[in-house]
Image (cartoon, rainbow, N blue to C red; front, side):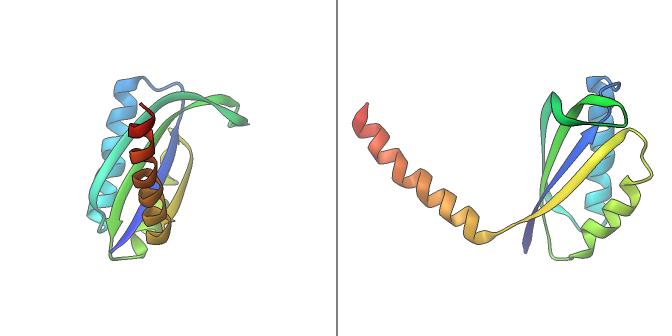
Length: 117
């Protein structure tokens, strides 16, 4: 099963409740098209590096999920392009090698941190 990270930038004009409602819609789209184990991480409003549609800030939401179907991203992107409250979105496939390397680093760092304390 492949693991994905999907980042969505919502308009800063939306309230926190509206962002959560829109994020729920994205979750439903992902699950409808084969996404499983969806984890939603709300980062809040942050300043962007450049303006998009005359906005310098956006509400960031990151979705982590698994899917056996590679088409889940294509189908989700097609539907999200119709949503005017979304400024930008981007998807990444998370490599198993990277995740294993990061886990090993944190495991190696933990004993030395405990000894230093």
